[in-house]
Amino acid sequence: MSKRSEPVSAEACIALAAAGRELQAFPNRELSLGSLAVSRALPVKDKRLVGPWCFLDRFGPLSFTAGKPMDVAPHPHIGLQTVTWLFEGEVVHDDSLGSEAVLRPGGVNVMTAGGGITHAEQTPRDHTGRLNGVQLWVALLDRDRHMTPSFEHVQDVPTIEGASGLVHAFAGSLAEASSTAPFHSAIVGVDVRVHPGRTLDLPLEPTFEHAVLVVQGECTLDGQPLAERVLYYLGTNRSDVCFSSREGGRLLLIGGPPFPETILMWWNFVARTPEEIAQARTDWEAHARFGEVVAYAGPRLDAPALVHLARPNPVS
Ligand code: MN
Image (cartoon, rainbow, N blue to C red; front, side, top):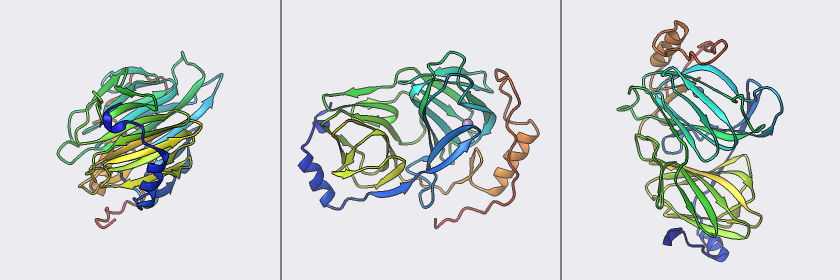
């Protein structure tokens, strides 16, 4: 670990909590994607974005012997990047550019939708019978959101390992770990393991806002216990965060500069106006613009009905 991430005492963590630093709790929303149960951490009521991160779904942990727990048929995206990160198991990605990549723990799939792409994600034929992971979306800035679509598979993301824990940087940088995956604005996304009986102090970029999601075990943040299936928002102006665990714990830490633009999200689209959303939906239904995923056996997803879409409220 870097000097700044040397273990600090649990007493120091509690003192930080006493200093009244911001920690807001936002419960996840439980829902189903086909037969797959997911916990949605973003967007939820009163918390739509953390830096450029605009979506965070947790799936699993689950075991299976037959079938495909993940089977998301071809569907379109615009204006965002998808980031898939696994704790256990496998997911195969196929897209309209012809990219195919089997994702396993330690690697990351980053798809840049830009002006439009289609992809499918499913459990591959060869699998371990486990599925446990997250998918996140990154909103692209207006200057980037119409860019040419692309896909990048990184087999092994950078790590920081110390006596107190293990950090995988799947997006952006934390301390000396910098992800090689392509992102277009400042961002951080890391998977943090705190070893049993240990305390881990991680440096943060004070201009970023951050949030934390526990994915396994138990953990405290600045001395305060964290619950699973709750997104904890840390706000900005923090130069470090301190995690402790008695039994061992694992969490995600995401962040970035507060997003400077107001976005409009509908289905798999991130845009700015209802007209853009309606056009993207029309193009998908007309088999235009997005291409086809030839590697996927089966029908693609139909867009839901566009009943009413309010213009984004600039004060929210
Ligand atoms: Mn998708």
